[in-house]
Image (cartoon, rainbow, N blue to C red; front, side, top):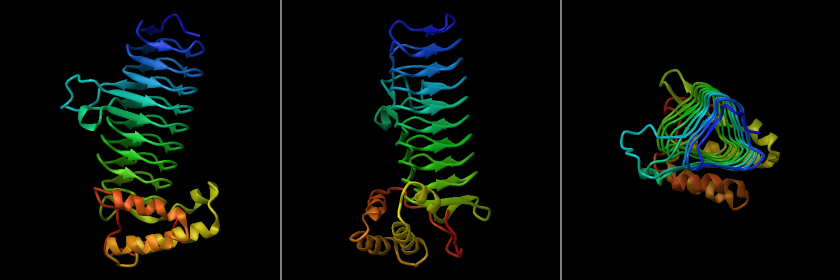
Length: 271
């Protein structure tokens, strides 16, 4: 299962059935669970803990030191769950002391070529990151979110569950759950463009649930209400439709504020 040209540190712990291709390098403190495959020219440095049935494609760099000038070799780690696909030239860095010391990737994620995931990022499950999408440090991406090609997320921002970021989106604030954002040529930043109705439908949300989420979107972004009043109105709707609790909780925990449309914009449409 291990190609003779692979270099594996004696301190690494690798399940018996892991496939390690030509010219891979596995460093000290790396743990790799059963069913994983490293194609060729894959570098995994530790401390890193890799779950089961993950696939790493050529020339990806996993678990190396964070790109942070404040990092001086202190203990930090990378944790990756199960059944992830990590394509060519992806870079995923370990955490830093300022961010809790860990970068964490969940399970069943599809991470395409040239994606960068910086130190202290936390990713949930069933996420898609398309080619060259990039996360700065301390970013959170919640379950079922999709980042299209060349999307870029500022440090400390959060991408809510089931959100969709269009191609070339520049994101400098939190993206609320269920919301689609796309680049605005006037501001050179991403703005909300409706809800991710197509994605929600594909994931089994009912037509009534999607209608309620659209109503919540209108309260949040098109009613003119202050954020606290819009939040309270959505919380009232959530008494009947519990899927909206996710949106209320996200608003309550936001520290960077939400990505919003320009004041003079009439933002319509949904995905």
